[in-house]
Length: 155
Image 1 (cartoon, helix red, strand yellow):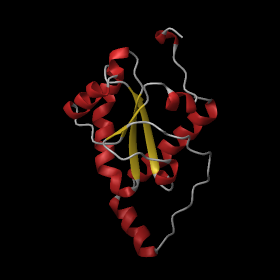
Image 2 (tube, rainbow, N blue to C red):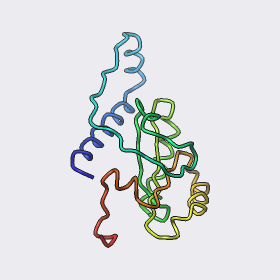
Image 3 (cartoon, rainbow, N blue to C red):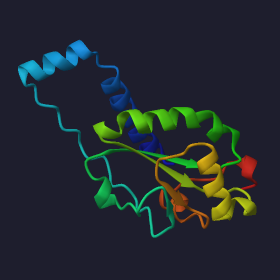
Image 4 (tube, one colour):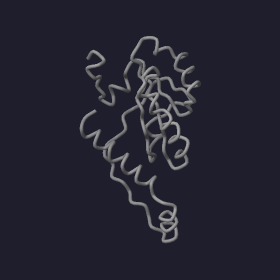
């Protein structure tokens, strides 16, 4: 990702995390005094997520996601890093979905057997992944986001 995109993501996560940490007392005070929420500036446009095959959801477009906080997680089911973050992604997805958070898993396989949609369905069910999953076996979404493989993937 470009530095600007990473900066935007950091700001987005900071704003999101700061809003999560707001105490109930502060929230009640804001409601009592009718303080309007500040509108965030538009930092860029969400790249297209399709066309692709989706699991756990109908296809989602950028128009469907407008006005929501979107967390996109690029993953592959054999990756230990994904397995370590999954409990957090699952919990955030469930806890904050009514507040406008949409977690989307973009399954971008590293190995050929991970391209098998049956394998992805099985693991998603076993691991209780309930949020939408976009299949990205041809790296179309990955490339749209201008991600790059690290040296450990044999660039």
